[in-house]
Length: 234
Ligand code: SF4
Image (cartoon, rainbow, N blue to C red; front, side, top):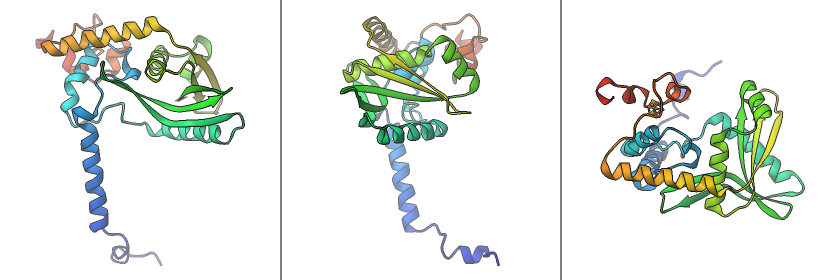
């Protein structure tokens, strides 16, 4: 016979333990969301529109956790599986998982899914799960620019000379591995972008929009679209 609610209440309760655990989680989420504990710039978003990045900088005081800190659940399970492969495959050794890298001057923090030892050298690995359409795009045209820039910045901050991007098709587990090596011109241009944006911040300004209208691919998915294209701000 199914248990009634009153039966269940005996072993499923909100008690001191669950309340103090919730309290701890709330505290940690808040701590992770304070400006001091969050980077201004995240390598994975450096190819985005300057104005969008600037809105994010000004938004640091909001309760929304930094997107650097947030994980997408589907991506996490794919990452976990690949970390397991690295763990059990001969010839690969995991040196670090979720390795955090930073540059204090630019206030930039990044994360590398795994640093592995392969051929006796450290290799930074990042793993992405994609749908069919995006996976075919990768196979045809190579890695997405934002992922390459992200990896190059992470290599620069970690002093590692080799990076691999692993793209897995979420529908059939087919995969592609692409090698990324350091490229100083990209690092320099992203450093300049950060410094220019920090200047804007000091002056309390917002950069011009990067697009002529809000129909661009990036504007369509931008979290600041409404704010950005409001009449009085134009
Ligand atoms: S809506 Fe478009 S122009 Fe405005 S911040 Fe977003 S991406 Fe940039």
